Length: 111
Length: 116
Image (cartoon, rainbow over all chains, first blue to last red; front, side, top):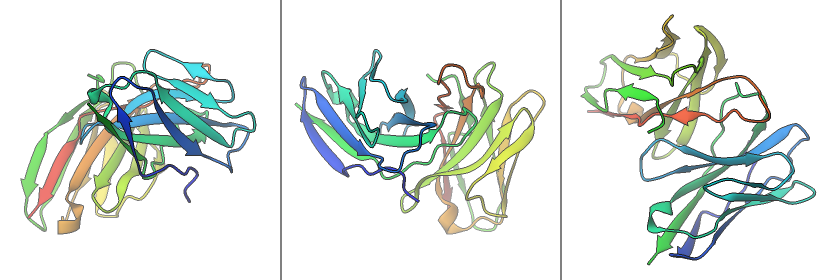
């Protein structure tokens, strides 16, 4: 059962912010929101995760709504190398749990 | 570079054959996960091992098996191969303890299996 809903594709101009939305309306209190991306056929790469507070790291920012039913991943200055499929995943905080990937959002950064 | 290594990078074999894929986790990571990515099924979790023992099973076929050795490397064995087994197979590793909410998995570069 899909726990998240993402648009299948998005475009973004190089140098502009890329805002990738994710709906997770059935998220429970102990579940975190994780974002991964997969560039071409490489192994998925961890980007960021959060529980209820907004988070920022060197790669991106994660904005989670107050009701935690949706979130947005922000790439502040997208580059061509950010072209990838971005996966929003909801999972429990136990690090031992597997990741359940949905279809993700294919982000195309254009010059 | 995630620190997770997988061999071989490419594998071409025939239907009915058996192959072994190998994964070495990041130094210090006790958990190893195997995922399959095919064109029609997307990325799917197969199986997880933690410190040598099976911890979780996903959509893994009975023809597939895995193990994790004392040095923590893992092998995924695929037998009686079918055309539909052609896919990318990824291994990931994690520290597998919950510390302040971290627990991301680090993925290897994958093994591309082609069954002819």
